Length: 401
Image (cartoon, rainbow, N blue to C red):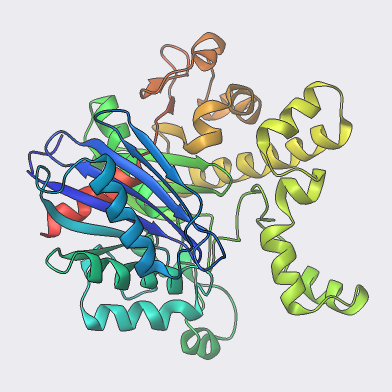
């Protein structure tokens, strides 16, 4: 637990919305949280909760022209419902930034040069970095005296070796256009790996871990001694595991084939692979809970989709165990990973030869705390460790200022 005094406002900004949390660093507790959405539409919407009093407020009427107006709406919510920034002095604003390219291997205080770099990297993350930058600009206006800190999803994976991040395409072309594996969910993987070491009572530097961040977006990372050495997402968050609406791994020639044979434009194919694939593409429903419920009622399409989903995770577990040269723990985190006992059990079934076992009773026990779900004496610990990306962003911001 941090002993830093003061609070950090953590902002996750999208193109038409942003989420926020005010986190007290000394107690590492959330003081307030909220959502500003429908930015730029005819009617905006705000939700705010004071975690200290439990008071919740919402407003669904006034239009919110842009992110700066969204921050004004957020400030009004704090004024109306609290808590007060006077009682909880703001030491920094921490921003989630999706893509840091090769330039950023750690969190950094935002300067004009950093803003330019984030903007330039929009070519690699056109759906995310521009919106992240809009949030930074709006926060600077709302909190002119607070340092702005950018925390990059890609930073944790900058420890990948060239053999792990290099794609086997024309080298000159790849260098010119920054084509390589970057990896994402790094903030979560970093937080969970450190929490795992704390839970096991062992130095992180001694541990070989596979962390499975399984939510609507999903990624696997092999972590050796606290360093990311392999990760499933690539140039973008599209590669790797099957996700709610993203395909994960496909033969690149699928794109060319569907362009020629189905007449789909490259824009349509990009939308399909990102927004109409994964569980949604396989079943018509992108929510794991609904797909699993359908499978339990005998829906063969849903069961087949879940088999694909599990198969892909097992593929990465086996590959990463080989890359690590041993394994101390497999760790499930994020919404699906933390809450779906059936998925965990069926995914790891049959991996006893790797030392991986599941204790059914422990696996079924729901909890918000880190916990074992493997059998006593198993060579490899299987854990559920809840992630907290907002707290990790707050920690990294505080460390800088």
